Amino acid sequence: MTFVQIIDFETERLDEMQQLLQEAGERSAGKPGGPKYRMLLKDRDNPRRYLALIEFDSYEEAMRNSDDPETGKLAEQLGALCIGERVYTNCDVREKGEIK
Image (tube, rainbow, N blue to C red):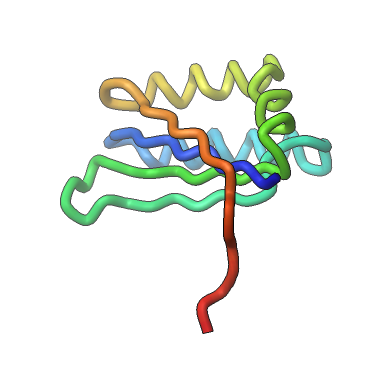
């Protein structure tokens, strides 16, 4: 079952975060088990607040990715650019599709 992790965070250093993510993506290109899709949402009412949606093929793949030392290092670097704590929400995708 497809799995999505939602990360709720605040930052004033989004450009630096995006640079770290781009570099990490280049290093992990073609590596199995990583994220399949991501989406970044910006809160219109709080310009420092973002929601990142990260999609994996399964919960198990997400946990293997989470256990990777490179993922831990990236999370630490990203966390240093955040204001306050990040909030993680783990979701199983029950339905997905375009609305026509």
